[in-house]
Length: 166
Image (tube, rainbow, N blue to C red; front, side, top):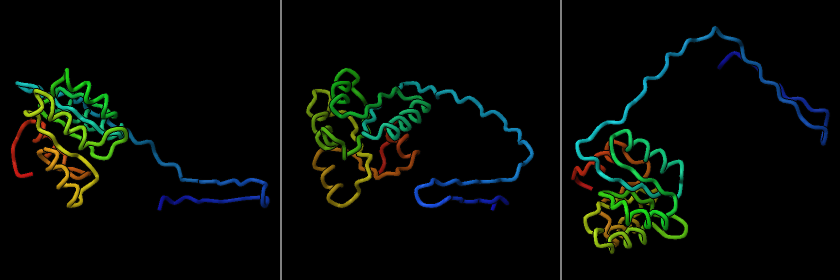
């Protein structure tokens, strides 16, 4: 597709291999710099907790929500997240269900048990989307169950406190 070639060479078993990839040169393309995106300013910044043992996924979601103007705390360890939530007192928490050390269901149950926990909007954000998973999140008191990959605009709506059908 690129007009190049690929060669593989070897002097025989146990003697190593050489792979040569040749691609044609193209004229340099000037790339415009991307604009700097400033975080949105919300009149009343809502506190959002993101808990996912996949640190890359958690950090990415945290950055998106920060750019949307939310006050965000990200944790990949649910035990640490629970301890931090006691001081942070989030308005909404996005919680992965399948985490080592403490499941998202257990974390949600513990958050609900806090004196301030009844007011937190708990959102399961998980790869687990079977009927039994949805039933488990309802029993544990989570408000919404989103299956990954979830729509970013829906996540932002939930973080902002916009109520709509789960």
